[in-house]
Image 1 (cartoon, rainbow, N blue to C red):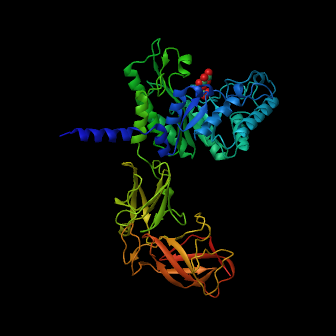
Image 2 (cartoon, rainbow, N blue to C red):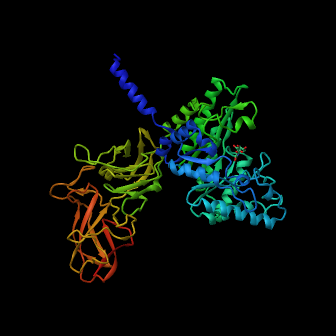
Image 3 (tube, rainbow, N blue to C red):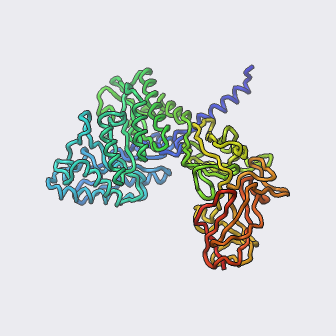
Length: 584
Ligand code: XIL
């Protein structure tokens, strides 16, 4: 029987689930979710409230285009874009830059230039000034916008920058040059080529793809392709959009959805039918889901916040209501559909991202090895380190995260979107390969398969880089360093993982507390400065979780003085090279 108490509970549970904003969901996906804005709208309270609640990124809808931002030969108008930058900083949002090179909205003075050399210098100065001003503040730029023609198989659009008069370069040369200038002005910014009607696989996107292949092959500093996605609710074949995202991200490029809106028929009062709003919601859901399926599709942005301010009615008569919020900022069916996509697309992981937590060596895993899995595409927005469970164990579920090895849940050290640390269950020792699955909030990734090896030693290093000074203590627990070198005959304490099966056996996630201390079944040797050194002890130590190893190694008399390489071998496998310690 459903009592009122049950109902209340249900209500609380439901509201807890749906209380998440798109901004929070995007943070859990490690992606930017933005909106194009005009600084004038910041004064409208519902606009600003919706923007900061639901989005973690802003972009200038017009303020940074050549005409508005550079109205005279030496006159820049930075006030509007500074206002957007300030808004972003105040509200802890990212900022995307739009746009440096486009055929529209250029300043009359630059359109009047007829000499290619003069035009080239003008563009170079423009890019330097604009990108340079916001260096470190704008994380990604649309460098070139809409350079290809529609329909006519892959031809370049006639434009000021290309050939009217152009900056004196042929083919995609002017595009390449713009990327090089932008890269010089801010070497850390991600640089994008952005276009419309090139979202599906078609003649235009083929041309963009060929350019992308060429730029990647020649090392042109282009980091991604922007898909504008000004769709209609009739736009179909999302599989073709996914195929296009796939081929571009397979080149190692990122994809950003940059100007998403879905226009639908509206009456003279701007109202759409419920059926069209529902169809629109499905397009939004499909586009967002298509992006979320690909780890390198890293940003989704709508071309405005709500239907009160949208370019669509002015440019497509009879169409409108294209955004996620209505003219009063109430969420539309499309809003729920985007949320559903965020909540239902499973995370992904890659075998190449699975590394030893000490050495960062990938390739295979060993029983009890502490790992870092880089790249899960869904997880807690902030890093959350574990607390031991009521049995004193490292838990196998933490912050809604679980990781399975052949179906066995692994102890979790910490979890954050893009990075989770786990300890390989000892039960993998009986298998030659292991299937790893990552799960967040009940959504499980497709499995990846990796080889299992008996041991895979890695030495922990002081700065956790896997290189250089080891995390090494003297017998008084003081750090080894140039100022505190180990003497010949001293015993130093090293820390490692990847020693494989232990005796006596430990259960997964158990913290070592009692004697006898567990030691790896495989034999361990150590070399310091190229000289064999006695290993007095290797194994679990009180307070260390199963899988973490302490080694007590004596500095042999023959070890040379100075900064010396240290290497251990457990079973057949060696620790990473280039870990060092100081010897007196
Ligand atoms: C549009 C703006 O939304 C309008 O306000 C302006 O009048 C014209 O430009 N592709 C782009 C955007 O890359 O810069 C365009 O923005 C929409 C199409």
